[in-house]
Length: 578
Image (cartoon, rainbow, N blue to C red):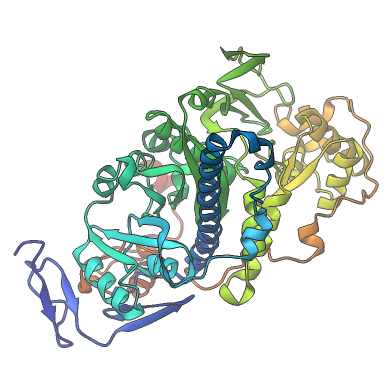
């Protein structure tokens, strides 16, 4: 039986079916899942590949596309006005000075307050591609909740997913907007590289890493279009397998307290690298680290000159193995002198062989994106467009977007207060005290949405450690128990070079905390992390039951096994051959 054959199975079919089944379509009563304005049907409870925790991801994507579609519409109007003005100026050169202010431009606030009506096909709207659509839930939500859409191509390589997708498209009445596609996502994108066939928005949300799709994705987006990418292989991006990270993303990951922002910057660097190969560059609009994934939204433009500036936006990362102080080293720099523009390599390295704070060695990671990861104007537009009744995760969306606005845009990475105190071997001060000390010293400070105890500051690392030393003076550590090679001992022995004041600063408490916004996710349910890879057969069993059955499997004695003694005597241990 070929992979294109369909076998219909009634409710009496059990898991002892023949091994020659390609895939099956279950005709048992459907399982319905409602999210936003979409309702999707699954063949049975066994085949539901739906993670409710990802609703936040999908809600935010809907909000992003609403704003993008409205801005695209406004940009098209502006282009037409400019063309009309140019034609008019050519015919009536005498009235050239009076026609410059005829067309009043809508502000972002005006545009967001007049979002396009959703659920209606717009022949002059945007075209969207969802490369890995699965059940079609995301595409259906876009069709019903985002205005100004001409068409959405919902693609998946799985035959069973295609059947499920068609059923859901018919069920939700969006056949005129959502077009199901059965193909490899990369091939769909490669076939759409011509300017006339490109998409305005491409959404990639694969299982694991999206690296195999990025080459086609950066080519099939129109100039000024957006690319939305999700990565769920956080173990790779957060330093567990730096060699694997290099093969997938072209960068070495590293274990660090700031690993979630490093993961975002690795993904941004990877997308930029793919785009540069075709004379294109990216502008990050929104970069999110949440739950078990990272999500980035970037605009793509064509400009070979801008591509030359990329090497000044990516950096090597040096991290001390003792105190974990991080130092960034840009690959190059752009020197502008009037009309002269020169591209120069950076001199380095920026650190000595031993850390200046604790004397330990450094390890190198990267390259990572070191330019801003958000566009503040775009964040404000998305936040202004939110309507509480439209999103189940409204509170969290509003809180996270507010935190992103508060982040220092030109300060990559962050410290974690608990880690700083742990290195020094002291009890940490309160977050508001540490922030006050930085502000009183004349530096800026913010939190990062990627870490609950994060401290993002433009203060040099010397100042950060001076604050720790000053706090240790007030609350002494037990230095007698510290070994000579411990990083904390060497740190505390150095002199304080900065005047530190822990007096409460009026701006020490961020607005997002004052307003008691929902900023970080609470554990919503049991086993709420990433689900297992989607199955194409009904006979894979209940995953929860399987997980419980295998819990502690290696620790259980199998029938017939000899019981291990509770304690092995010394004499027996000496004679035991392993």
